[in-house]
Image (cartoon, rainbow over all chains, first blue to last red; front, side, top):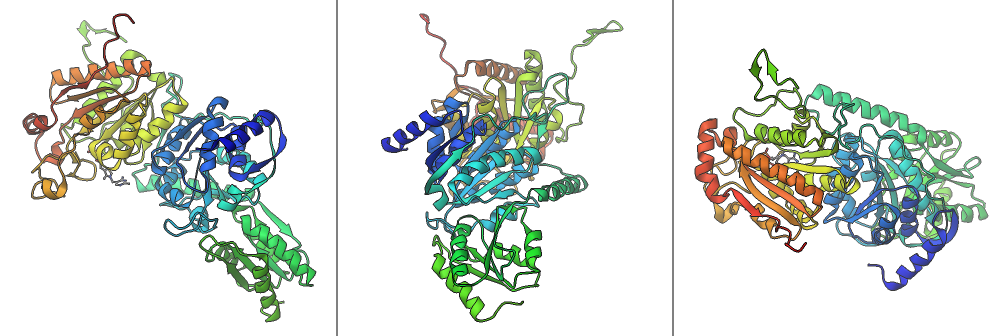
Length: 375
Length: 258
Ligand SMILES: Cc1ncc(C[n+]2csc(CCOP(=O)(O)OP(=O)(O)O)c2C)c(N)n1
């Protein structure tokens, strides 16, 4: 439960911003929750887990009076299956959790992906494995971008690196998931969820609802009955469904988004997403001050992954340094993109530790010093 | 629809709420009968346009092929969670689940208890055949003491495998349960009573007073390794002592001064 203090704060914020676009100081989790309502969310199902409980706490106050179902489920398993039901009934639905809770949802996410139901799943990651820690991490990258649950499916994965993007990606998330009928995951972390920053919120009602003729809303005499299923017992049919899904994953490649910093003349290029990318911006500046021509690629969509631009930059750069808050996960995709043309190094911290710009800079300098780069 | 045909009277016909797809159920199985009566009630009440069904994994996983209404197929154990999602966003629609005993009383026990505890305004139809039918007759939470299944080949030993779970009595204690009854499909009168209970439940759903829950004690000739006739006799002699038919919780009649 939010204490009286946070409650008053959110009341104050809400009193002034509802209905139009306005700039405020907000916590990442709350900005995301507020943006979800402005993006026309109709149902939210959640279960408390640190560091994302503010999303549920915020929505239980503000959701119902602004037309959204908000329900605390008995578990993440129940919550994701409530998402299945509500999304299948045509509602714009969001769910959030943190790492252990997201693990628990994987069977349901696989069903949702197979049944092609639109929804946005938010993972405010914490350090693991196991119960782990409540400190921020990026160790669920593999789970998010490679599928996570059983079967051949993908999620569209968006990686915000600011409170602003926590809010903006709710709009992008609903737009993409409804356009492609592929579930979207916003892969954030505990630091972005907890930190307060300036954020400009788009006005409510700016994301129109499109028709969902496939939804189960009750069968009128004028159409065949609709059903939501992921069961296709004949392997020939199941393969057809897989081919159809794979084709959608090809189509969605055009939605790839990334940010480039100083890559044109860079000898060494940092690759990082989310919070790590913010740290790497600082690293890049410090390196440039020291005369090292460093650049930065920041994948914004982790699936689709910006492989093409990385491959292009591999033509001119001499080496890459991937920085993550995990034991080295995205670095595998960077290596696939670079495809052996240039060395790809890795620097990571794990278990809830955040790398400092200084330690990343030291790594970068040692690569340069030891001439590990291929011109 | 035509009521007479060359002077012959039509006394029974398939309802439009059932598709023409041949059912895959084993001969004599109770599922087909339960499907039919639910669909008859929906047709007779004229609520096809306002009803959404949810059937999870189990023998009735293909219910959407037979029930000619909007349907969702849910994960094993999660039918009432999915139904909660549907009902919460479409509160004016009728929503029902159709679940087996493994689904409702084992893997989905948490969802069962919490759905009823929230008093979700849905109907839960719980087909209790005492085994896991779909996966080949394994022990279910409702399997009787001493009953042989493929995973209790020497009979269910309650000391190591637990006792048959009367989940219907259990959930009847919850304040969210509005109407709880146990019915069966072993005879024509039983089927008629089941139909009445289903109709009653849909009527109650309009009142938004809580969950309606109908257990249907059903036979599973294949799982029990009996002929259909033997299985119905066995049901009366063995299932009923543990799962006696009848109402367990009925709404209080409105007070006279109301
Ligand atoms: C997560 C998961 N575990 C196990 C299964 C396999 N499975 C399918 S149906 C079923 C049991 C069904 O029994 P019941 O719910 O009693 O329904 P019935 O088939 O008897 O009608 C099981 C264990 C599954 N589909 N999903």
